[in-house]
Length: 107
Ligand SMILES: [Zn+2]
Ligand SMILES: [Zn+2]
Picture 1 (cartoon, rainbow, N blue to C red):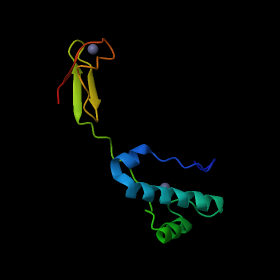
Picture 2 (cartoon, rainbow, N blue to C red):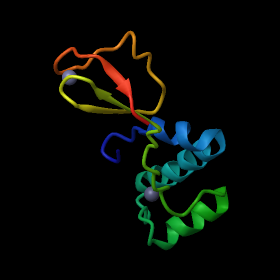
Picture 3 (cartoon, rainbow, N blue to C red):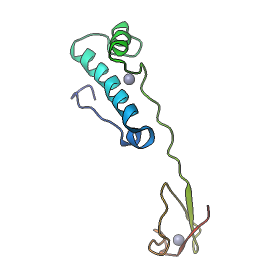
């Protein structure tokens, strides 16, 4: 956030891309902040940004985040509400949030 110079890193970056990509994203964000603080061109299209990004080995563009992959689908037996989760859930322990019905894995 340029107003506060706090760096916000989406935890999804780490989850989906791992440590190396996370450090690239941080480098990239630092380029924005550094240039902004120095009153230089801090936007992707600015020459200052391009040069600095190149110098520190940061990607020139913010990494677009891949959509989360939901590999597990569940459905309530009673009201047919479906749930998608990244991780497997224990269907004997979880109940439907809507009707407290039993949840079954459908995919
Ligand atoms: Zn950027
Ligand atoms: Zn239900």
